[in-house]
Image (cartoon, rainbow, N blue to C red; front, side, top):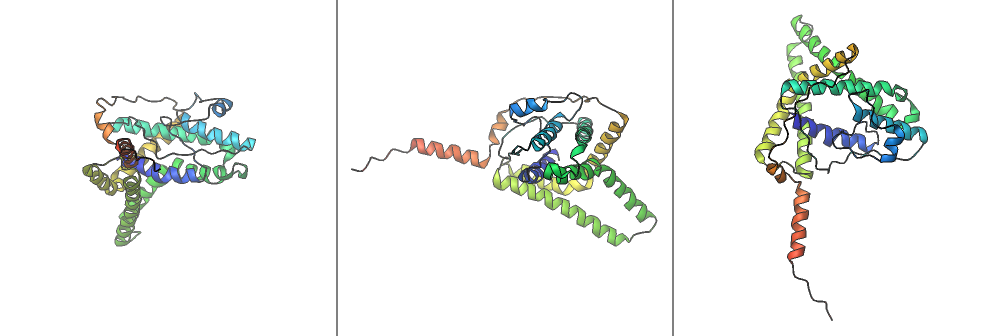
Length: 274
């Protein structure tokens, strides 16, 4: 489920925001920054648990205020590995922490919200991340409560509710399948057919139980933020162990490039024509 979530976020969400030069988050594990700009911004803040996002937003703000041309891009071709939570408890703490870091970043730079001076970052990214990402869990969980209450009291038609729910699930599934198709067509980092079938199966289940669960964790993060929680939380790390299987997960283009290079080295040179 986490893998599917990352594919959807990276290959659809971040690529789109990157094209607008309005991307607010470069993952801390995979980020490369211009050193002079980072130092001029003051480096990473130590009073937030979302230091990677906050730094990116601060760079947007500085460069916009200075009127300097710049771009902050997401590069999907990068081949990187990170360790993700392996237990539900660790995953829940991670998502709650991400939510607190998101709210921190928006609060620190609230001056940018709907401010034309900051271009698409102020007029598009900031409102989106506030209403969809920060407040989204509240709206989503209230929706579940409202639907259940409406069905219980007979305020809405059962057939209409079922049709609407199926339409919502199908839409979410379509987005996930689109992300899987993009990965398969462009990068092919998961050549195992069984793994691909698992991803497709997860795309169907994602909207049924995983997304409501992440909404609950994000709501927990929002409540923790309101209570003033600042701790990182225990994140258990197990390491990668044997990494031989990781070597098989090169992208299709990388393997083709390697094959073409070997062919060029092996092919005899043609004599120059006189």
